[in-house]
Length: 174
Ligand SMILES: [Zn+2]
Ligand SMILES: [Zn+2]
Image 1 (cartoon, rainbow, N blue to C red):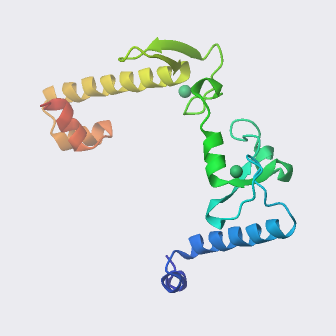
Image 2 (cartoon, rainbow, N blue to C red):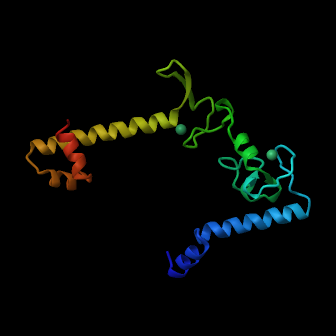
Image 3 (cartoon, protein in one colour):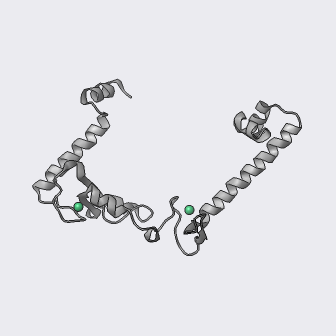
């Protein structure tokens, strides 16, 4: 952190960045009230409390369109609590897996988990996981082969490009 920034933060009792963000929000809340725009987009009630004042996107922009992020017509004020509640969409209404792959017909397959619940699985994630596992197995084989040739842990680590803790784990599993 820059020295001047640290001095500011100490004086404010919070990080200067956080304070600036708070101030901007406070100004926005003040102006919204002044022009009669301080009703919650979700519930229609007045947003009195600055702590509960939040700015949100009406239409989700992520994975949809970056322009929606900047579109001022897509911005609304709401109670933070109303906003958070609205974000918690049921699983079946979500359009993308947590990694951002589309939940379409081709990319979705259904499985049953340990508790017997039906769950949605992403094929791209599955494939990526499979590749990672395969890579890991190949690497382990290579490490073991080098170990049999009599190379030291450090030499193997350098050759394979992993830490020597990894090499140790592979060659000396416990
Ligand atoms: Zn509300
Ligand atoms: Zn995925």
